[in-house]
Image 1: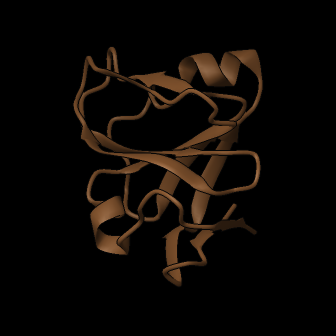
Image 2: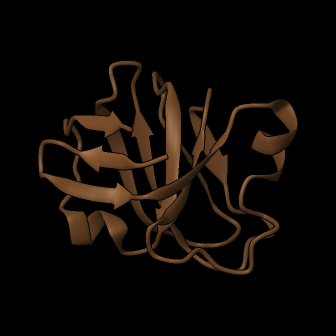
Length: 112
């Protein structure tokens, strides 16, 4: 899947996997040694994430059911938690993606 920030006309990722089952949401990115640029994970439904057991920081975007960004967390380090009440899904991306794409609360996303 490809995710585009249409507000900023920036591609957030062009190799986004989807975790929509209990098991895939449970495992998330834990089995990955790193997250290359352009890759990511969309977790749906989801309003909170953790980085317990991960070896690298990630950027996290919380999104509502209208595909609007409701919160961004840059560089969430290993062994941390993040949440946002009212989020419908979460996008986990390589650290630095949010800053590089100027993504912020209120931006409209498109999933292609």
